[in-house]
Length: 122
Figure (cartoon, rainbow, N blue to C red):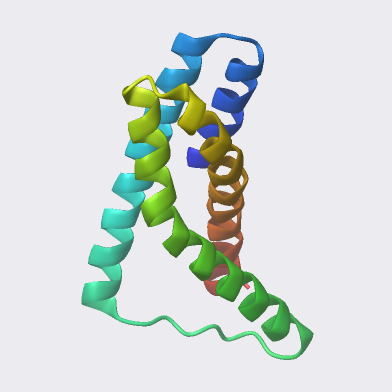
């Protein structure tokens, strides 16, 4: 859901539909926040879930997982800063930061689903 909201919000800003962009991006923050809370709660109670794949897929999985984890951690600073600049109307600082935040956030949103599928469906 976050990836879809991010992609849609990105399209809206390129179409100069600022109100629709704002709505999508705030919804993406809310969705991502709820996901993070649920993820942390689940793993605090269940613990680590081990990947059972073997062979080449194991290397692919850990490559995706490591990049996902590092970039997801960076979003803990990037998203609030980007959002704060926008909400304060400081678009001179918002836009350059959003150019970094958007692709990282989109990557993390998509790879999160890939990781889930690899762990639970592989």
